[in-house]
Image 1 (cartoon, rainbow, N blue to C red):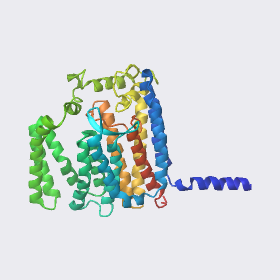
Image 2: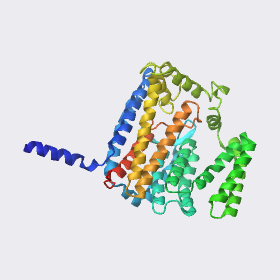
Image 3: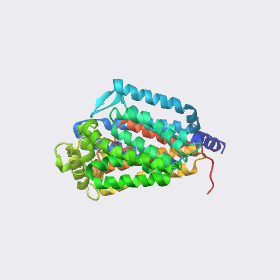
Image 4: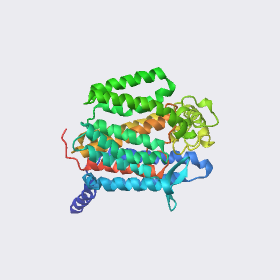
Length: 418
């Protein structure tokens, strides 16, 4: 009896530092990571490559890192926020000068045999910094909103210069999501993204652009504290964005970036070039039908018809080999992860912890929607990986770091009675 009691005490003391962890939230990403390794192996085995085990090794390191972060009080991040911000910008600057180029972007720094992608880690850094900016007063005032935008601007510009459009879009999604959760006026958020819409509409549908600009002027009049000047600024910004959109399209964006943004609408315009990825991806997903062709049995996957299938297009391999059912299960897992993130945000003991959870939620939701959308032809091909499933060591570590921080919010929350 004494031995059993001691054993129980020892086991309880071992797990005590993680007793408030959300174990469902922790185990679901680990399961995705393991499943990702199996799928990656299927896409690479005919080539004799072994990146699948690197995915698992990196995932194991990320799992340990997440557990360590979950044990560390997340409130301590407030003391380190500006140091984290400075280190993030310095590493992004280093990439611009001495970075390694791949797929048209200079986004990596080679450290030994490891290619480090600072822009991935910058996502978590920005979540931390934005949460620290917004946690005290929220985003009810335009001053706080502008402060949050200013903090995001520098790393966002540095990432655009690489150029890495996909990660820049993730930054935007994180910022909008966290501002919304911090009680920013929804009209302000619409005004923030309105120049992008104006730039797109100006080139494809002029009457729609005129209607949009008019709507934004009205939005500014109704939501901004200085109605007349705010409406004037909204009009000028959207009118200017329309003109700049054409200039950026012709002189700033590279050819491969323009293809990624437009060919998803009609990939048959360039079936052997920019539209090739999407055409083959849709064939693979359609070939899977209800239950899939089976692991290692997909023709598109095994015959290497889809380049980079183990990274950005991993969902097409899942669709072909595991079918509609497999795709639904993956989506259900992501849905459960997002649900747990929302619950942790609602139950956090302070605004800082709540904003951290929402920042991670915004990052995951945007990446999942864009990645899956681009594999089935509903979104441009932007090079955004599918969290925990796509091969990419920096991205995988980043996702586990984000998971560990949110688990710390759960682990150190006040006990709630339901």
